[in-house]
Length: 111
Image (cartoon, rainbow, N blue to C red):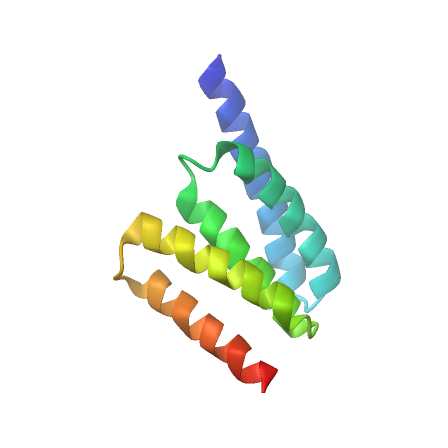
């Protein structure tokens, strides 16, 4: 029964994440942030087993905040994504490189 609850939470988080992803694709960043936050709130409760998905969601939040010009929030979420990805993948891997690149883009935008 306990695993069923985690599976349902994972499914719900993925549902909200995919809604946010679709809105992001349509450049509807404010609504995307809302759905990605819903997913984040669920994943924060079950993230031990879903670090990869949680890190992807954090990354999307960072990119959304960057697109609407909220660079400090973008840095917060992109840094979290990077830390989670390093925890999951180690210091190597495409996702970790992407996180460093995303952080660089945001820092560059602050100038």
